[in-house]
View 1: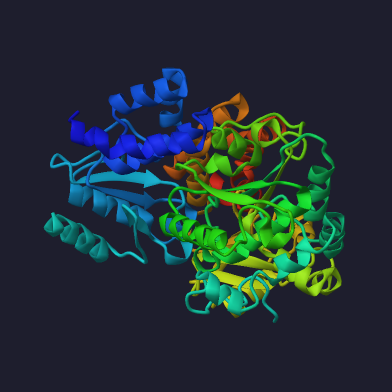
View 2: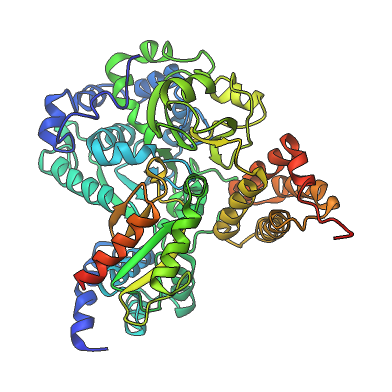
Length: 160
Length: 412
């Protein structure tokens, strides 16, 4: 890990830890901040947080593996979260998932070889009135059809 | 019909504090701060407001219990971890009217005697998180949050705390664990949160929609509020309609309208022929009777639960076996794994339903699903496991033939 990567998260989590008097309750916000800044939670960050908050590694890993939005695995530049809960399912989310897997050539939880896309099948995103829906990073894509999904992937590929 | 929660929702830039104040915002707070906290509690009790997150517990009582506790400090927590499939009502309030929630929470903090509040919001609500933080900053600048609010000697501050993708954290004791930086595993009850919640301190935890009723109750009085909607449960409810429906969305309607009125008059009718609906998301039992009144008691009498008011409509082309399987896939994924009835029960039910989906079901498993549902209801530690089988067991009870048809033919 380069120094530049580290500087991306260190300042942020120092501030979070200060605000919470270096207690355990800072753990989840710190991990979320690292995830947001670097797209995953690197070992260096885990070691740093463990020491600063005096929380055993097993508990840090316990929290990371429990929460769906946290991961130690590198994620793609675009994280595609596709909902398959009932309202989306009733409106054809299975087809959307098939198209995504087919277009990207990866399965659930995997990353494309160019590290551009990660595909995550997730529980309800609260977009049931716009089903079927996905989120691409923080962007909401709603009322999807197979064609719309292919367009989204194509545009993200072109954007680089 | 008079709207309370969505009254001003279409006003442009309502998330800006100036616009909110121009529309009468923070007036209820000014009024409440001049009242005795016990008087506020009486007012909320008399309004007969009950929790809108699903459990329908009387809000005034919850606040009274918390206020009466001797232990300090106390906390007020807003549960904005909206995750029940089919629920997207709190999102509308959080995004378009964040100050309504902030004002409500300051009133709540004053009433129970808390100086600190948290809004626990799901991590995927990126835009809503941003807007809430901006609104809180504005409220601090204007003196509605912080020390000595409006010269009342009352101090209160708010913090947004983001979840990270775990449905179970919407369960209140699980939410406290998460807020303390731990895995989302539920706690034993009692003690109840009002005695021992966040950091084992007295905590009142309320849903976004519940809290947002407060300013209207303070401004207009309990008597006014208690006359709206159904005598069973006063007030309006934010109903979310989704699934196979022509006009999905959030509708604020009086408690007690029928499922038929909701679907036909507001949802634009079912897409295709109506078959069944889940009135309270995937945690509730299927209903086929369109004339059921949508209030907590009537839906419970009909054998289901109104929950958060997430009505998911299913049409006749849909296999109910597929629907039940989808629900169990969800619960299997979201079970925290702490207690065996839920962890193992959701997995076994998911496997069994998977076989039925593929036409390889076993006759004896149909009744086994019902038995498993009973065991999980009795033995699971929290609401997730207790409710996980509702959709599946009601599917068996209402549409048994569809399961029988998916039994593997022994000669085949």
